[in-house]
Length: 141
Image (cartoon, rainbow, N blue to C red):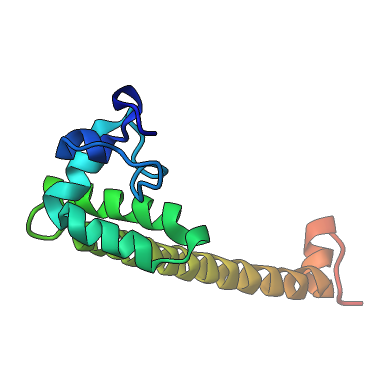
């Protein structure tokens, strides 16, 4: 990565030579300069480098992705950032849970109403005087 044409996005943005052991190059490729620009705007290159170095190697890509997502959210919504999205999602969950509770209550009501109707029918059909009236027979003898 020592040639100028293959500098990572971070080194291009910072206008410096990209060393072979550049901490940024695996996570900020040269074909996506906006990725590092967002992260740098919110956190600064030094802080990003420290965070990546302090993270275990197998988790560094996730950290870079997280930093990018969080910085993009902060740029789009400077007041709330990611917290705004999280709050909105919590509100959506609450609304859906409320709607689900209402639907379950309606189902329970309709099931109890249907059960009352079913429990009432067998008593009517089992009554011999009712059956006799239907068929035209008299129960008196």
